Image (cartoon, rainbow, N blue to C red):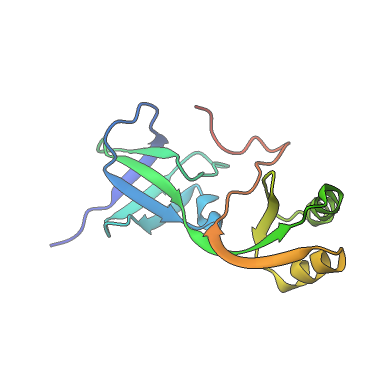
Length: 149
């Protein structure tokens, strides 16, 4: 029996029951056209507006009415920590100057693992911790990416 492709082309606003979970790394959450598999194994086809960036916790509405929750898949990241906020600001400046997607929290900076960036950050006097974690970088200030709820 041939499996049916679940087509997804819209965001769900009023979410009740969730019918499936779509776990994707950041690279794939930036694609508006994508074939992927839900955690259940069902195949889905995304056909979202160009420039859409999916975030963990978003809900999508399939053409057949199913509600699919987006999950930020854990991936190899570098976490930069310091009790010195000026050092963290300097690292954010230098990483941003290289147009690196960057997750910013009150405790740390996080980016996808890259040994060259890790070395640059260490030369600034910061500690780099490698970890497997969901990656949710800042939205671009000038890009209008993402969607509106």
